[in-house]
Length: 412
Image (spheres, one colour):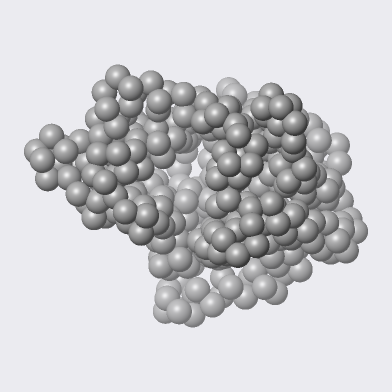
């Protein structure tokens, strides 16, 4: 029977997990501090705010596929990961320095966000195959659950910390915490000692290598299904997000403080899921967990669209929806990553991950635009119902695919 050291006792995994934790908390701080700096201190226009929002996700569309091909060419991924975090730290550090010097502008913020987005795109492309080096194959689902738990924890703790820092130091100087978080992450990744024995894919031209990654996803029924469902979920999720804040303010009359708690409820649901996923996948397999998770996807949309009554009644209904949605999304995401790692040959992991990121993350911009336009034309509540119907499409898609017809291999 296979015996291995528990993940919590593995030094290098703890370092990797810690690097993600500090970096994600720093990112949550900047999610509040950067837009506040632009809107409240620099008087950014709506168009400028839109460009600032898009700047961090645009690199995924511009460089995502190329980053995956380059990641598969590398023998060592950690130097690239360290360099990406260091570059992001410098970009964030320029913001308070420029504000202090009286030079800060909205285009400066947009440029900094673009640099950080580019670093994030390259980091993720290298980190996915790197995880397979640090963690044994039998522990990868548990490892991915642990990584997703820090994302959920950051979404619970980050907004409150961000608000405190902005209150104490003003928005531009609160961003210093994000710069330090990137530096701390770089130091932690650099401290990992596991030898990197990745066999690089032979270079055959960037376009040919990108096409090979695309064919690996589209030619594998399981990977194709996961990528397609990820696109659907993120498209309608972005449409939902585009109208959510306006809807709860104008239709449900929730105060801003309660809206922040709704974000935290999503994170709490995600944390609960990460605690249960290793046991559920060990018993039932990743495929069955995914098939059950998609059933819950429309729940949050329906709850939000039908919420009514007093402020607290509406808040509690939406918080329950957030808990369920957070658990379902994180369960899907963790098992998504574990199945992709298992189904993908080692020399294609960077490109397959980048192809998924390009499609699944890139569609967020289009979903947000569609949600805004539909909200303007049809009204806010119809967008929620359209989102519910859209994500519900993943249920028959998954259940009629190989993911729904079989259980994934289980590891002990």
